[in-house]
Image 1: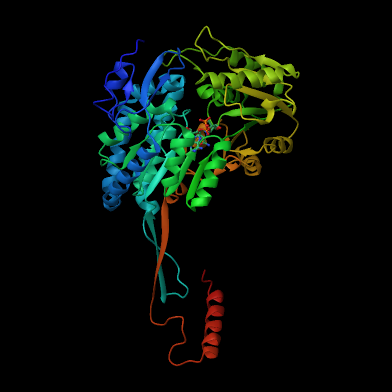
Image 2: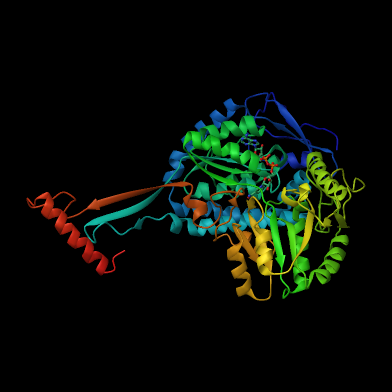
Length: 530
Ligand code: NAD
């Protein structure tokens, strides 16, 4: 692919300078940046070829983005909810209709297999549909019980926070860039979004579709740049912070939010466990484990990196699992034929190699994979299964964020639960058993924000009406469901007091008023008032 800049930065400072002319033509959303910005060249992990020359925003540009967003937010917050919702229902349709070009961007930027990209198409459509249909209900004014029936009448209102700052990682380039923005926008906020440079084209394509769906100009601003400088500037001005990324960066973001006293959602790392009980359907559990461990080459926060097998079925499961893993098709093709794609970068490949080699050198057994595949693409690595992993090995407790799973044998549900909870993380877990009631009992005892029974991760993720997020070092707050939108609002209690107030009426002494209230409180408890 020869470098062929389509737009002269001197004359069109807003453009994204895609190296591939076909890709550039499809982008309509703009990056907020000054004329003649610095640029960064990205490459596709599929082949290593240049992909896009991206303009970089400065902290000053972030200030400009916030000013425009604040001005646009004032009229957006007054736009009636049905009108807002219609935009997101149109966006839902556009995402499905234009999925092919979105999938091209996703695959070229992240290296993932097309099927794994499709998960993000479905996720984005489902989140859009859900909040378009449910935002009004989640946010409508609620009458609440007052101090005294009929006398104190509170109404709870929800107001938008203002401008929400969102910083997103590269791994789920569509989902992570846009699905947190959807409820924020529907709640009447504006958004300033910083996608990772490695996922900028996908994010800009999605933002372009939102504007095409009718989002008013200025309500969603995109800036690009490095995390510490430009991401720091995004969070410095945000009325609410939404961060998805590593736990290490999440801690810095949390410190900053605490200093500024603004709310924050932190969606962070995981070291997720799957338990296969002795009564599980082994064929389904094997298929589920292949998907859960190797989707997006394991670069998925909720993917499974620890596999606990009941000793009664461990051999049967492993025999089938190893064969299934060894027969996975790796390919850089932009088609649905591959089972797994590439890692995103040299840094990710280096980390995966380091974890596997550290484990191998300390006595782990490689049951499948364990090799880089430069013959397929520069950052391809085989799906890998490790056994005999011990606490001395980095791969046991650290997030690999790659296609590597360690298998362990357990002798009971209690042991599986204990081992699953032996982690600083608490993002996702999976339990396989034919007895769903048993699965639910086990699930309640696992400290993870989502637990999937007879599925690896997709069941809970796709259930967008229910909350999703991390316990322990995996994060704070939740996306999806009511929490996923009310967090972007300030609640307000407006209470009207009728007939009598809280000061002694009718010339009563304070003492008699206190006695009267004591009788009234006792009567309210006896009457079952809550
Ligand atoms: P990262 O923390 O290095 O970067 C994430 C994003 O934050 C990037 O866009 C980066 O530019 C930006 N950033 C970096 N430093 C910053 C700072 N000081 N202030 C503001 N922004 C900053 O993470 P990564 O390696 O890009 O992503 C992989 C990690 O993300 C993994 O740990 C994975 O588990 C996690 N993740 C979590 C979820 C979830 O929903 N829980 C989803 C996807 C990824």
